[in-house]
Image (cartoon, rainbow, N blue to C red):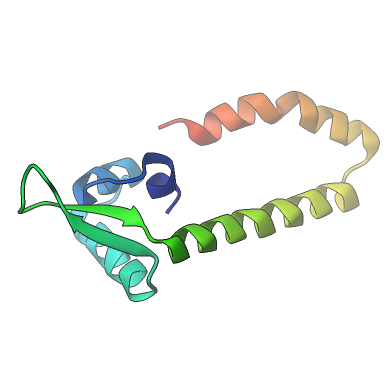
Length: 104
């Protein structure tokens, strides 16, 4: 869902490649997301055999809510578990960790 949010619309094969899973596995994921009402499928303007996948309004809302809850949990956990010196270390390593997390 994050990739769809970032790219707005993708072909299932593009999404599978980005997530490093098979097209068959992506098809199952997309069927589940469609069943939840989180994605929309629109035929491609260029090739009617292909379908572009994008987040529905419900999907975007669910993704943003999840991210908000995750961020709140993480902030609470950091404040509760880390000493002031450890907070400073986290501030120093956040940029390199973000680069690693976003590496594809």
